Image (cartoon, rainbow, N blue to C red; front, top):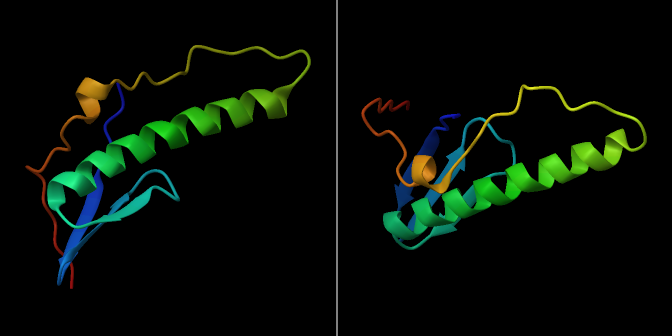
Length: 88
């Protein structure tokens, strides 16, 4: 299983978030709960899109090796908030 970290920010009425490890996975919502759900959904979609893109790019004769990382909705249900870092 792979762990992902979200960077979240609250400004005025909006919550903004980014998943550090996957470029392009960023969201904006009106509540933290909505933001975290959007980040989870967007992350899963990005992983699936990247997988499909890699398979299409490899077309023809290729081998898939055992380096896959399994991601489940249970793992993404909550991001680990115990390691919070703030930078100004």
